[in-house]
Image 1 (cartoon, helix red, strand yellow):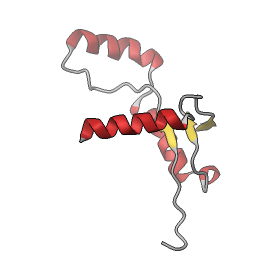
Image 2: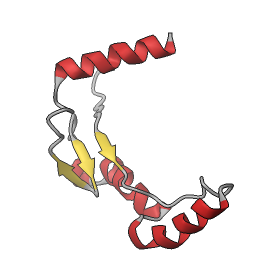
Image 3: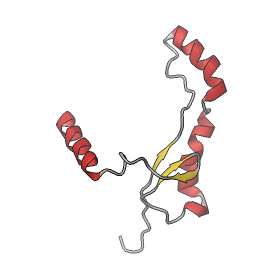
Amino acid sequence: EEGVNITANSLHPGAIITNLLRHHSIIDVLHRTLGRLVLKNAKQGAATQCYVALHPDAKGVSGKYWSDSNLYEPSEKAKDAELGKKLWDYTLDLVA
């Protein structure tokens, strides 16, 4: 529509500790004990999404890659249009 400001960005929330492994007792114990030292909790994991969606500094920014509430330069593979087309075509084959 006219006058609508739509942005599209990519982001990485980081490694987040969740309860997804709760039914795998040994892995879950390791995940919950060691994970607390190196993984983000759910609120920390949501911070970048909230920042990009709501912070005035991110207003109008589009087509960028965010991590830890900061702009980052994507890897060379992420910027490779030919590789992106191959991935797109492969995905279409998988879901067809």
